[in-house]
Length: 333
Ligand code: KG4
Ligand code: ZN
Image 1 (cartoon, rainbow, N blue to C red):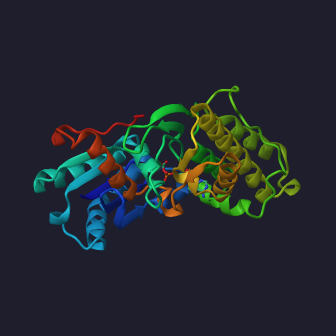
Image 2 (cartoon, helix red, strand yellow; image 1 turned 135 degrees about the vertical axis):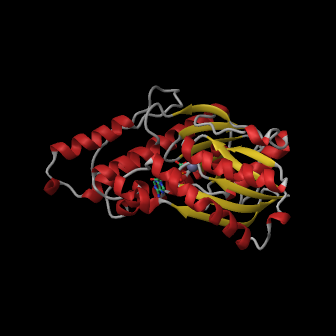
């Protein structure tokens, strides 16, 4: 089954064609990074407008790259949520219009389930339940999945900032640019991660929740109380990054142990972080895990993951029944 995926939940307008949930025929992403950079974060109204401008071109480009026409597409999978409502509506409206006009079935997909699918495109499917850490700009949560085609079970999530949001806010504070995760990842390569002992918030021995706002405040306080001549910004960001990574890794180890699983996936924009990937690789060896991490270009938002997840959703519950009344949802599991 050939699925056209459409994604517009945040600041990337994306479309892709994927066959049987695994064979990637095209992957087109139009990024709005330059639009939001001056603001140090995503401006929802601007994001919606840019999606409107880009969506049809992106869909056309994805078909062209896949060397097919709409006639060769069996279904359209679209992100229904969670995300920015104005942004989601653009992708959903386009998908609904195409599906209605060309009489193609529609599949509505959860964005986080999409991120999870990105980890399994290049590898064997897990033959047992797995625990998954989703860490992105909008979400930081742990899930337990019995199989890839079933909806993931929520185990715990952030009580305040998402991990990616913390990266973005710290980068903004330091005037380093946007998106913060990428800049901090690069700068940290020249920094000492043990230079500053920033707090790691664990919220209790058995908690699978996260909190990053205290860490962000600690960075703010550090910058306010220290002259820039007394520290290197590379050390500061490397130390901040280390604190985020330590918590993400520790909570994932805890979740895997609590659930007794040996298959672990790490996905979302923050999964592109080199230090995070390295530390998870070490943990996988220590704990004898099979670790699933997407290639870097499929960690951040894309439509390949939506088309792949759409195939799983279709196998689980079929097509979306009422195309015309499908709505966007800002919060979902
Ligand atoms: O998954 P994503 O594209 O969008 C959401 O669904 O939110 O994630 C974007 C987030 C941003 O906060 C960005 O700073 C972060 O992922 N990010 C990174 C890296 N690349 C992107 N964070 C840390 N290290 C990176 N290399
Ligand atoms: Zn995302």
